[in-house]
Length: 425
Ligand code: S3P
Image (cartoon, rainbow, N blue to C red; front, top):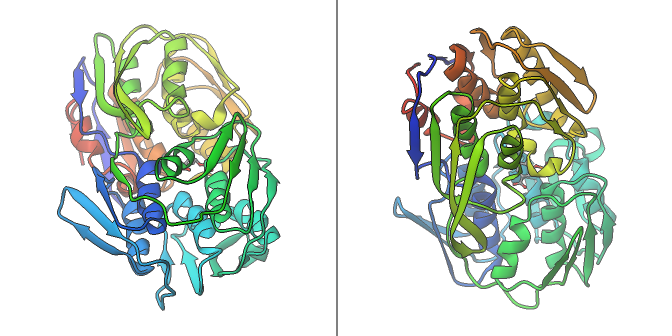
């Protein structure tokens, strides 16, 4: 098991156009290319474990994939049964979206994942898919991977999801595209909308109206994608917090998606006092541009709305809360319990090890701003926990154990962190 020692930073001006490409968009590019006729061209695809697993599965399902090191091209020949087991690794997005895509494909498919993914709930997609005729099964009556799927004809649906989850929404949209009529999907809060934007750009008939999405079955294959994947705001946010907690420091991130459903954590950091500006420079499928973050003393904040828009950033936002004046609160975030780790527990336990007082609730936690102390913490195999506590190290020094998981989403994280402070591995 590898560990990293991060040393406190004095001050830095960090500027990068090399933040990891967006994970959500990369997964979708690879999968949606399967529904297109012709060659999809994807530049700046995220070359991390999660998304390379998805790309590999797309190849196992019969697509021709060519990678010249810069542009990945995908030519689909429809979805074909394979003798191989489809391994999603650590990725919930991979597994849940493939459930939607494969539910209507001809043949039998097995999806599996690593020890962490095999513990995460899948019923949120298998149940609504079963309700419309999909033949899906797994341990615990279809809740736990490995999952088996036998493609079937799917009925049109009107589904109201209890959870605001882009993975559930996307799985159902993929199923709807190959169902027998117009479908309606509703969610309690808007979740990230990359699926809708990308499929619309590829010619699908989808209407989005606040919390309701209407989807019509495909009458012909989609137009191929031509996309440069923007930087991932969730990955960029680690360096935003780094600047926000280090006096006289700044971070500039270029080429990042400014999709409103993805930059809510930056808005919260602004509410805490950080100085943040956004500049849109282009727009294709998504608004894309740059974000500048400058240090300012931080004050406590309550986060209880639009949780789906910042769920992935809450662990590192908690590091900013630990450095802020006063008691911060995260509420309505029970989804944190079923991420790559139980992130309520892993954040609270690790903050306590760093001398920060917390209170744990079933749907969130409170963080008492104070003085972060150097400690030895464990990631529990969760990439975002590992990176969050490396960022805390910028303030006070930190040893973080079990850092291999960072490769699932941000392989050049340490190379970039070394531009802000000293790191030993
Ligand atoms: C994702 C959706 C979110 C997010 C995950 C990526 C996606 O999960 O946490 O990292 O790409 O659709 P939920 O759909 O479970 O909220």
